Image 1 (cartoon, rainbow, N blue to C red):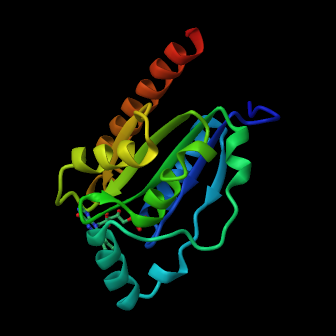
Image 2: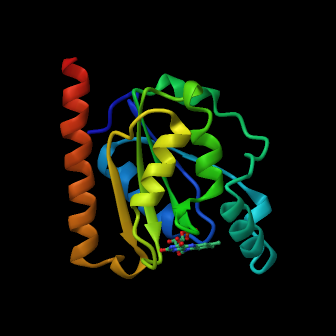
Length: 170
Ligand SMILES: Cc1cc2nc3c(=O)[nH]c(=O)nc-3n(C[C@H](O)[C@H](O)[C@H](O)COP(=O)(O)O)c2cc1C
């Protein structure tokens, strides 16, 4: 049964729908609130794609004018979004760089085309945030609606719950 006040928030950015789909699944599983990170600069089919790749390679880019001050009230923030040029997508990185304005516990679950290993992306995310990520996961687009997706989500949730329990105890 859903809690009256969710303790977990899922903030997602999705240019083409894969991460939005994953975020919704996680939110249902965890009875979490969902917040969409908007980035109109990257939404055009061709120009948006080019800008996304260009900003990601330069490791630059700012958030659109969107307030995120309500995120701090959650105990745990899960960021969901795509891998771009081996890094978390620029809008996720821009948010992670505001680490002090976010809950202490932050996890990162990425979607990908599976043409680059995710370790570089997780390392960049933790560096942006200024502290270690609690749990990490990556779902290739090709795994959607397969047993691999179920296993990947279950593994992420297990890691999240184990690490959460450790944090609560300290
Ligand atoms: C500009 C750009 C760069 C990308 N770079 C990578 C990459 O380096 N490695 C990878 O596995 N997938 C890469 N992808 C594929 C996306 O990570 C993948 O399709 C993701 O699921 C898209 O999520 P979304 O539909 O939520 O936007 C890239 C996609 C874009 C638009």
